[in-house]
Image (tube, rainbow, N blue to C red; front, top):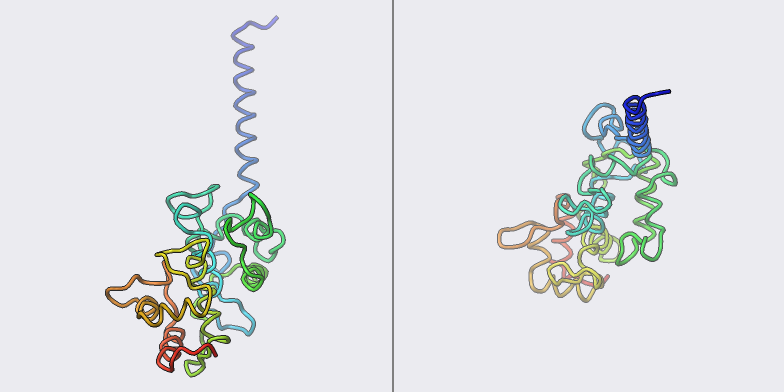
Length: 237
C-alpha cells in the first residue's frame, strides 16, 4: 500500500501537469503573431505595390483608433478583454488570421449584436467592415505610404472629404461618442467646425489645436484636399 506522502506527491504532480496543459492549451488558441513575418521580414510594406491593395495606415488603422482604442475600451490603459488595438503590432498580435477574415475574431465580432456588439455604441459601416476584411484577406500587412494616387485638385465633399471624415474622425465624433463635445456625423455639423477654424487647425495639427486624428495624421495630400475644399467655400457638393 502506498504511503500518504507518496499519494500526496502523485496528486501534486498530476495537478502540475493539468495546469501545464491548461496554460499550453490557452496559448494555442491565441498564438502570438510576429508582425515582421507578415511583411517579408520588415516592419512595414509599401502600400502602392499593386492596385487594389488596402492601406492599413490610412484605411484600417483609423477605424481601430477611433472606434476601438478609445479611452476605457481597447486602449493601453483599460485593455478591455485583453486586447489593445492602438497600433499595427498590437492589432495583429491576436485575433487576426492573415488571409482569412471570416476566421478572424476581430472581424467576426463586428457582426455581433446586443451586449457582444463591437463597437458597443454604433456598428461600423459596411464599407469599414469591407476594408478590414479585404486587409485581412490580403495578408494583414502593415501597408503604409499608400496615398500615391491621391489628387489634391479633387476635393468634392461627397466623393473626397466626407469619406476622409467618416473613416478618420466620426468614430470619436458622433452622437454616441462626442469626443471634445464635437459631432462630425453630418455635413452641417462638419461645417460648424469649418467655420470656427477647428477642423483645419486640428487636421493640420497646428499649434493651439488638438491634433487629429488622435494617434495618427492624415497624409499631406488629404490635408491639402481639406484645405482646398475649405478655401473653395466648403460646399456640400
